[in-house]
Amino acid sequence: MSEFINIALPKGRLGKEVYKAFEAAGYGCNDVLSPDTRKLIFENEENGMRYFWVKPSDVAIYVERGAADIGICGKDILLEYSPDVYELYDLGLGKCRLAVAAKKGFRDRKDYTLRVATKFPSVAMDFYSKKGRDIDIIKLNGSIELAPILNLSDVIVDIVETGTTLKENDLEAIETIVPVSARLIANKAAFTFKKEKINEVINGIKNINGK
Amino acid sequence: MEINDGILKTEEKIYLKLRELYRRYGYGCFKMSKFEEYDLYGQNKSFLVSDRVITFTDTNGKLMALKPDVTLSIVKNADLTGGVQRLYYNENVYRVSENVHRYKEIMQAGLECLGDLDFYNICETVCLAAKSLEVISKDSVLVLSHLGVLSSVLDRIPVGIRNVITEKIGEKNAHEIKAVCDTAGVNEKDARMLEIMCRHTGNRKETTAALRNLSDDVKVAEALDELEKVIGICEKNTGIKTEADFSITGDLNYYNGLVMNGFVKGIPTKVLSGGQYDKLMEKMGKKAKGFGFAVYLDLLERFGDEEESEGDVLLIYREGTSPEKIFESIDKLSKKGKRVVAVSEKSDIKGAAKQKREYLI
Image 1 (tube, chains in turn blue, orange):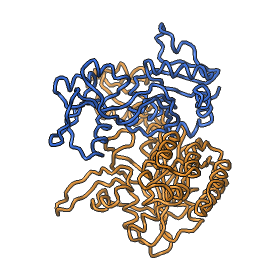
Image 2: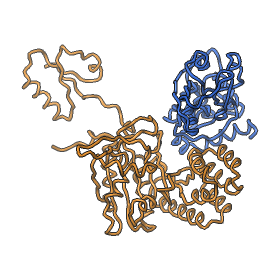
Image 3: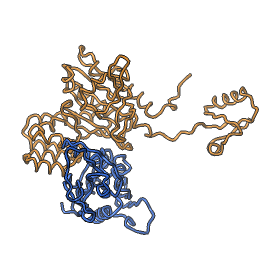
Image 4: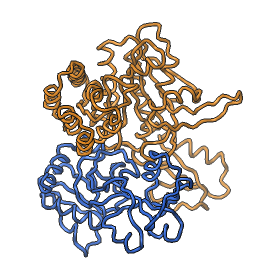
């Protein structure tokens, strides 16, 4: 095997699900899903695949900077950071949506600057600027749902999967910004040099996915 | 004193070789100031890689900018009275990096060919782009597209989705292009053309044949003819792999014709980009054509360079040794071609001493 394809997988449930699709397509590698290993990088010389797990929000950075040739990344991250990468395939996994949520019964007073708490300031800014709305962005790194409850913000912009967390905290989604799912992304230079192999892998995954 | 080219950094060596290459083809050096009036950039924001520019007010009250781009200045200042102007440059520009998303000083070299350009001039510029990549590494690829194909499709689809389609083409994002086309009611042939442009995987003849089959627009046929001819000529005249890739785009208000990107194995982003910008020339009131490219030398900083130690020999001198004696020892060693670092025996030399020979004087 002359060259490896380096793949950045997002840690967590989505990454495991995606890896299983790679494995089913014939691109598996020993120990990737083993709970006991402390290895960081997994290689299979026979099929030329090299996997590594990274924080989901870092996948796009690994790919954009060429440490990984391809990676699996949520559309939410791609919208927020606009990395200079190719977005080659929508895996249709990890489906959810980026939405605006607020306390139940929230009334949007247009004469006030809207306070928006979010992990996605660029997405929120872009969404409201298209509406011509003046907003005050409050960048948070977690527990976003707390913000409107404690009156830190009027609304939040966050990932909504089933809506259960919102419901349990007396919040509701009031507007969908964009549907989100996992995307296969590629480094532009790596794709130029390894496009045959990368396309072969994508076609394998497509066959498993049935599209 | 003779200069050993071993002391030059990779990007410096490459620039000197590029300079020699461009001079061989009759290009003259264009030297410019670091500053330019902001108006030039304010009026042509979408031509720039990033529309954010570092500005300051000069002592005469004029709003100035640290140059974020070279082409605009060359076009503005070029004397186009004498047929074809061939210019090369090596300048630092200041703009927001596509990767870091912060302002960076970027060293770039490149060339611009301006005037009444004919097909030879187009081929010459593309071949010089390929030869520039060859100077950096033989393991490089030059990818080309022709905006005539994209602009033909964009002319027929709703104005409101043209920008998003151009953006998605650049991402090779066929799945979202399909969704946008379905929603906007784009006709099947045009949607299929856009999909083929995204999914093109390197088989040029197959892709161009598919595009020709889908379009009866003469502009598309002409664009594909030119693209194929230029790629053929470039492949024959340079040692660099040249491919078509229809995902390369540019602002259609400025660029027309051929556009290109260059990649070098081992460097994660494009090291060369350029294209034909007749529309920019027209916008700036020049009755001429323009074609050029830039090579991003700053990306070559870590390319092919081995880690360099500070010296070959660590010269350790005892307390009280006279400076004359130390100079004399350094001279003796340096005449043998050694690089010498002189340190006192009282210095902490543990780390360095592992790698170098020591002389105690």
